[in-house]
Length: 155
Image 1 (cartoon, rainbow, N blue to C red):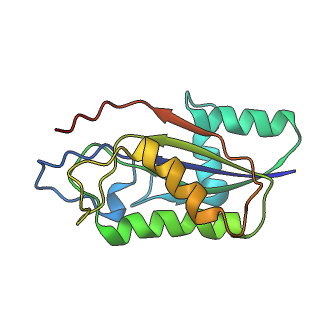
Image 2: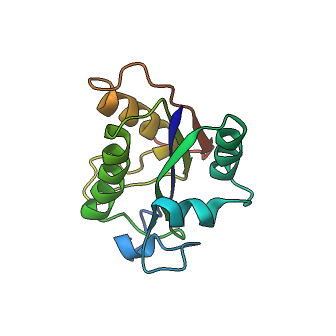
């Protein structure tokens, strides 16, 4: 059995003038930006996170783990579109290599720059986005998604 794990966290403050760039997703990575692969997995092991629980579960099942990306940012302004696409494309490229399950640890309400809505609940949208984007070539893959529930109020 092979599983893909990814951790993506960002809480967008749409009122903030500070735009979130790819290098901003460095929280917990000890690098200038996201961590990938084995390094990302090592940084998540034994932490109090859903990603760590996914790793423990995979170990208990003797499953192979392909850790796609650890992208964690402090709350800030809208996410540059290129940064959002890089993170999303990284997860998709990892999944396309083949797997039996995709395990996502998501947090926050991420708003990519130039998004038509004022606030997008990334926790809800990301699950729908992942399933829709993967559906044509990965229709039967198990995809649990852990989310931190955020309230989003719209008129």
